[in-house]
Amino acid sequence: MRQKVLAWLAENVPSSRINHILRVEQMAVELAQHYQLDREKAATAGLMHDLAKYFPSKKLLQMAELAGLEIDEVMVASPHLLHADVSAIIARESFGVQDEEVLQAIANHTLGRPGMSPLSCIVFLADTLEPGRGDSAELQALRKTSFANLERAVWLTCDYTIKFLLESPSLIHPRAVATRNWFLQKSKTKQPVITTTV
Image (cartoon, rainbow, N blue to C red; front, side):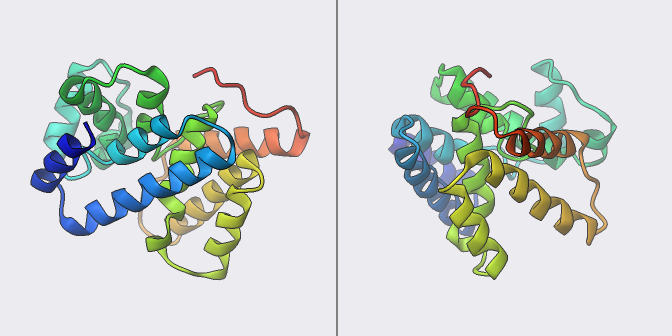
């Protein structure tokens, strides 16, 4: 199936984005191995996380509406935020992915979700922290944290992204803030590792 996905990506995504996707796939597999999670699921979610990245806004909104996804004012103003959820739809409908945890990892890779599974966490982290994103001291520290404590890494990576968005004229989706707050609280209370429920 990997070759089928790569062929599809070659027709629908620029080569620079394919390079990013392959780095996300690789980092997700490395994190999965480190945390003793299913490497194949991590690879699949990493490879398919940006299937809808370059869909036009109108198509993203139409597909999301058809699938009955919740579309709020921020998503209407910034339809690009729907590409993660729509990528999960493509993964299921075009590539036959049935594993709900994999589909959720694809759907959650942009905004995250409070209480998301460890698999979702590693794809979320890999998307932001893969080596092609840069080599600043902050990114290096976040990468190190991602291999030390998943919950803390998600919280701090949310902070990193939100700071970036605050410095640009971009809307911040409430779910990104909710994800940050959930993982901050979880990290601070030092409760057991995240449950695998989605």
